[in-house]
Image 1 (cartoon, one colour):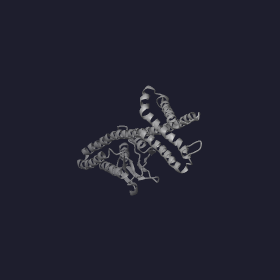
Image 2 (cartoon, helix red, strand yellow):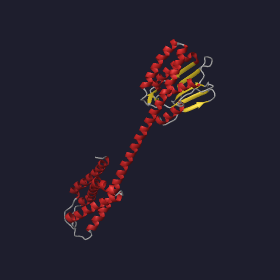
Image 3 (tube, helix red, strand yellow):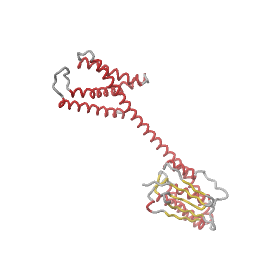
Image 4 (cartoon, helix red, strand yellow):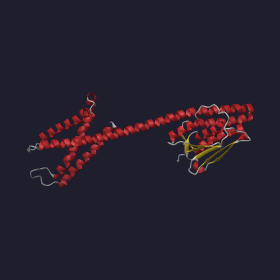
Length: 336
């Protein structure tokens, strides 16, 4: 059974329960069954709730069995639902008046019909309210699922773009080191294998802990130190209490790679990278600027890609501070 029918049945059941409770109270409130109107006060109290329950059940039947067929021929809600509902209730009113009530007063049928029309209108309004709430909830759920699927698809696309970016730079560095120092290249290759193993095991994760990202990034820095020796210095100052917080995977490593890629590294003018926290609990990655005369050819992803991932996953952007001699990127972290 569809959710809308279940919801309507639940609301109708509450209405019927109220009517039954009022009928039970009739036993204690009712007076002598004599006088011009033999109905007890409790019955008079229960008439409207009972009528409400009858109207609710009749409209639910119309909605379940009559409306689907009529809607194919008459797209108007008035013709495929409201009008059949009124007609069914009119037929029930007429049958009830003839077979059960049959008051001698000439205006009794008119009063009963008027009451049924009023109650039926109220029921239709309530049913449309319930259905509109259910439809709104369904649309919100579908939109949320679509947004989640879209975010996940974009994230997977971005990760796939970043993987070759990492790999090509690492292999180029290894090729350069093999020509210069085969023993150091062997150690570099071991670190590269650990780096790649870690990378492959985390490609399916949108967010990782800062501890994991640091361990992964230090593999990269160690490889670069093997390559550049004293031309590269780095300092990591992260409190242990902050390492459980999360950030998008590969964020820190990408910043380190950009620092190495776009700056001159020499023993006389080493590149110094510092990774630490600011007083607001944001992760700061900063380095001295020593721009290369000519930029290296790349895929053009870099900070733009990282910024997009942050907007998708953390609903915020990265913060960049730079001048002639200094470059800093501030990353938000998620508390766990």
